[in-house]
Length: 261
Image 1 (tube, rainbow, N blue to C red):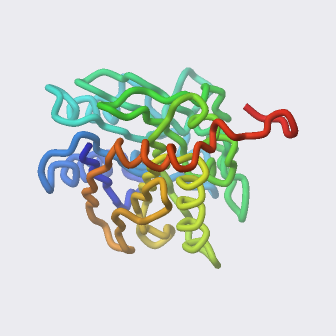
Image 2 (cartoon, rainbow, N blue to C red):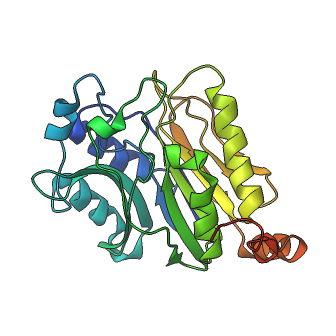
Image 3 (tube, rainbow, N blue to C red):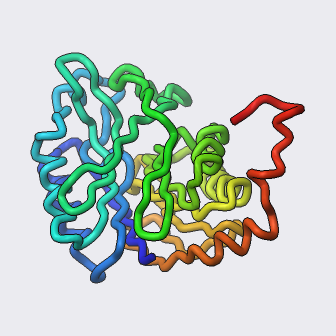
């Protein structure tokens, strides 16, 4: 399966971000799936949460409608991320999997980034949707968002339920040691679950960039630097099977000695 990872620098202007998403997704030819980063629709302003909340849209809004259009006629499966309003109160940091113009899966960020000066909970409600993969071509793909990567139970839950591809959409803020943490965590989640892991990151002044695809052995199959750009990587279900035959980790967990799923 051919994956297109879109590393972009979003702003607080929704229309600008939609236009940039469409433009970047149209480059480098066809891919089976096109992955956008967290905060694709709008970068939140923690100092003025009401401003970001005011920009939230429903799934009938311009942002989701544009992403549906990208996926029509089977051109690509789109994995996007927006600030989505469920009702008059609840705003979610929500990722959507869109195929042939229809939403086939939703995931709301479970672990909000209330750390190192960030306060996502001032803007978003905590997600309560299940950790469950969805079929995309030959892969069972699970979606997680940014800060979720620091909680290995989330990725393990997906792997136990059959995931062989885990996609992290991230707005990974810059800071001391943050880039090393990003790379290490992506590799760790791949090795411990036996999954391909895609890390699709925001870039720009606030964020680290360095999107990458990691195979189940923890090897980097493709990566970007700090600049905006596209990453095209072919991923192989055969490699997942090979790794899991050597290291049947999900079957060897000692749940008789420690709690877990």
